[in-house]
Amino acid sequence: MTSANDMSAAPGAQMRPAIVLCQSLTGLSLVRALAQAGVDVHGLMLDERSFTRFSRYGKKIPLYGKHKDETFLLQFLTGYCHKLGNHPVVFPSSDRMALFLAKHADTLRDCCLFSSTTYEDLASLVSKDGLYRQALAAGVGVIPHIISQDAGAIAAWSVDNAAPYLLKPFYDSIDTVRPFEKNIQLATREDLRDYVTMHGTQSMIVQRLIEGGDGYVFDCYGYCDRDGRVLTMASHRRLRQHPPNFGSTCFGEIPASFGADADRQIFENTTRLLGNLRFHGIFGIEWLYERETGRFYVIDFNARPFLTIGHLHACGLNLPLLAYQELTGQLPGQIDRQPALRHILWSDLTRDLLTLHEIETGELQALKIWLSTLLRCRSFGNPDWRDPGPGIAEVLAIARRFATYLGKQRGGGKTAAH
Image (cartoon, rainbow, N blue to C red):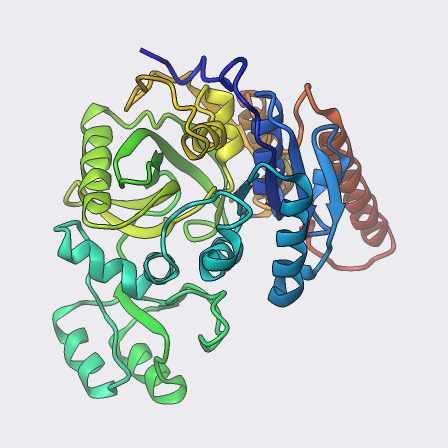
């Protein structure tokens, strides 16, 4: 049986190039995971804030800011694929780019390989209203919620669903969705009534705020083949997020060490949900653990490579390579569905540094607590000894920010360290 630790590009096989639509740390992690397995990687650089440009891996093509210009990007990508030849494999690193590939599938299928999930199915998964409908149909736990623009209906629902409440957009990157602050918390039924009266609830889910947050939010990471079968899965626990309890994870562990029963529930719920969908590709499904009942509720679906995919690679599971192998017909004969992985704690330095001011102790004690967790970590996002450039650039950026902060403090200015 092939383990997660010895997957590599098939020796002697015809190697197709790979193209990564690079945004944020996800793009860098994809480039590294593929290049370290021997794949010829080309990064279309869409985000100038990403440290991918300092990586020693792959060929970088600067297209900063072009991710919102679909006409240009489609023309450039098709031209670049034809130039490379041999139908390269294309990887998105954001929901917007995954939807872009699916939307233009009829054009792109002639020149490259990528997930076969249709635009309609993909849009339904990344939008929470669609995800929750499909989760309910699959018999998977969903936090009690209401989707309505009728103030009376919401008031009636709140009678049977006690405060506090959490308000979320369906999907904050869809242009037709009215933009508003994410994760709005309302303490009482009266607060909910007042908000609905003043702002309405277009493109919004109103749900009960179930106690969970840091340490009680989990992910199931894995890959589905073009027939929708789950090839492999792994668990992840979000130990620290920024902002706390509702933000992006900046300190976590893989696999989750929350007990065998928790893993069993996460994997069973994930399999049940995916069995009711038409999905092909890398996934990261987010689950909330309710401490009172021991139940898991689905709260989000990353239907594409996710921010922590590099940390998963550090544990021994290279999902980008698995996707590459499946799309190019080079899959190993047998794959561990739940592979034994190296257990690690990980931190993303820049985002985790932002949590310092949230630790409820004195400044020096908070720094000691943060450093103690950092010393236990074995994966750090941008820093990687095999690819030092991005890590050096990040550390220098952090140093510049601290120097600016200290200068303002000495000058009597008042500003937060973040």
